[in-house]
Image (cartoon, rainbow over all chains, first blue to last red; front, side, top):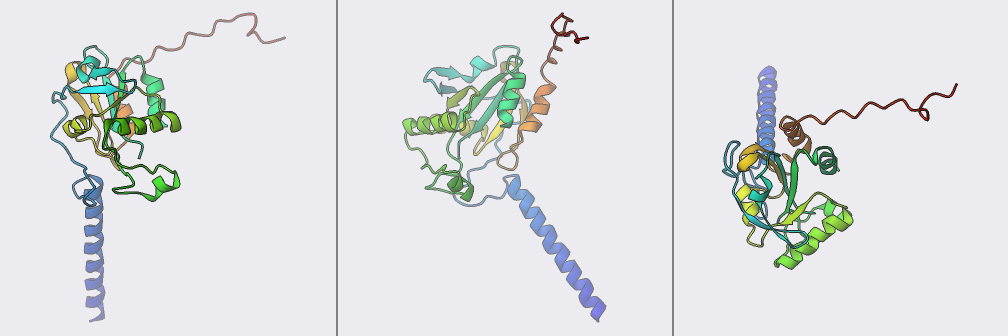
Length: 84
Length: 140
């Protein structure tokens, strides 16, 4: 009887821990969102796809298109972010 | 900062652009303790000039010096690249996506992107051998 309770408890703990780990991994990967201000998306772009060519304003106010960056032989290292 | 180190290492062999997008943790949305502690307490910009002001904070306070562009207020670049809150891509000639980093904050891994970049650019030329000169010769 005692052994059964122990085994039952161990299985419950393992299942809960597995669930928590899976949830955390999904959260990290952006599949599960924190709430209404969480705008993370996986996006449809994949390696091998053509990147969209968009117009942007440089910090100094000049206009730039992404295609101006990739017109040469050098790869483009593109970082997105904000200060918060 | 990792990004500065990568920029310094590969600038010349790769092109660099940062796109300043919508705030990840503005005070009027989803504020974090670390932002409060660091006094990065800003509202989500509604006008382009406000976003420019925050980009200026990045440059002035964090001394950010990688080339920087600012996304339009319709967040079109952010949306097209599923970039929010932060993400790294590497594009090849003609705009082909060669690397797509995972979404931040957990998936934002500059060192992983750096490893991908290292495989795409020529090795940095070895520094010229130090020529023996009278001034560098050991003093007898």
